[in-house]
Length: 186
Image 1 (tube, helix red, strand yellow):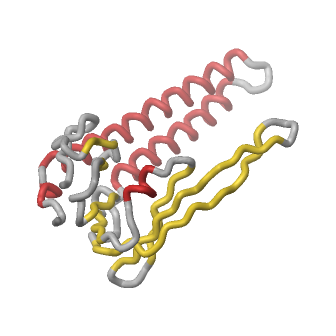
Image 2 (cartoon, one colour; image 1 turned 180 degrees about the vertical axis):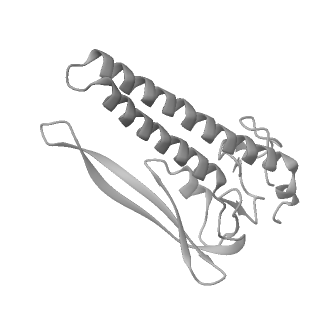
């Protein structure tokens, strides 16, 4: 029973760096598609001429590039903190589907964690109770700000564990994430 020292492993830094690069590269791809799409629209459509359509595409493309740049550069203003699971709730709601007024049941599973400064944080998921069942009221947890993830203090009775980098689910006896290659914090 302890928080893992593996949080300082270099794999997490490499994961974060590649994740930031991927966000920026993805935004560049979307920007090129937007510019190209509006250019083609201006060339093939009777509704808008090409200089105007290309300008709109360039503005939208620049917006995507800015979003990619700032999402990769943004740092979490919070720090690591410790807390305790204080409550868990399941909320049943309904979502409209189709035109005939039919509704689908939807469940929101929420875990409430109170941190050192008494602020309550929520972990929630829709229609998936895995995280909800993973935490028990009274569990001590540590929030890792750089990864935006939570680590349980006592994992001794667990059969599963989540990767703190990519949230991929693993059996407790695994040591390294099969998805991102980061060590599992146990």
